[in-house]
Image (cartoon, rainbow, N blue to C red):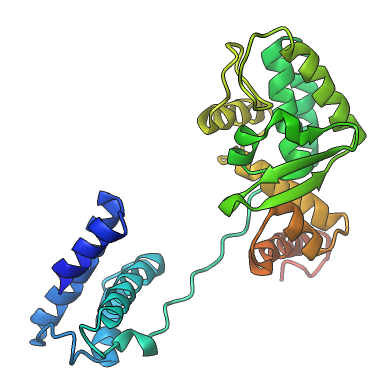
Length: 293
């Protein structure tokens, strides 16, 4: 049965070799566990108790909740396949609840760090200096993903109406407004860009006229932010977190931030309210005489 599922993933779903191997390892581990306790791997008779005991053994062995959740997902996908193909009516995963994962608090830059970074980069009057400064500012002001920065088309950046047209995950379109200062920076960059021969239709290009890659944007952000912060994470995504956190701290509605970020669910945006609460808690602990007790 496992081989039938693996062939389905390989030939019908066209999953990558690494993904297929992960499924295989998880299912074989489940099968091996059942054999170790004297239970036959029979898809028609396995119960949710068999699966639950395996989960408990994984937790007791020190597996991380994220790892356990992935293994449960593998078994769940396996049984969905079997049910869909009519290979069994049984499905022990229906009564299994995956362990909840702790949601990490987003890391973000301080406003003074952003200001210092822009102050440094704006004094570099080369094409690359102007471009790199704009990349920092455009992510900080609009919350674009790194991939959205790379794929941002010239024709979709309107400095007159001061808005961007962005195609995010799943090619979902959204319109993002921006400020007058950013509009001026974009026009200044376009003047510098006009001196470079290019056939690229993207806003951001290299000094050779080629569209930037996500890796290049990552390096640009990391190198610039390294000059002003000691934080370990200095990626474009941290800048995106900074945009969202700044908006929330300045009173923006969570649903508005959700729309600007292009999140599909409000739950993904609400993580920033936790970041703000952590900030408030730290201020309280530092300021109140009994806050540390």
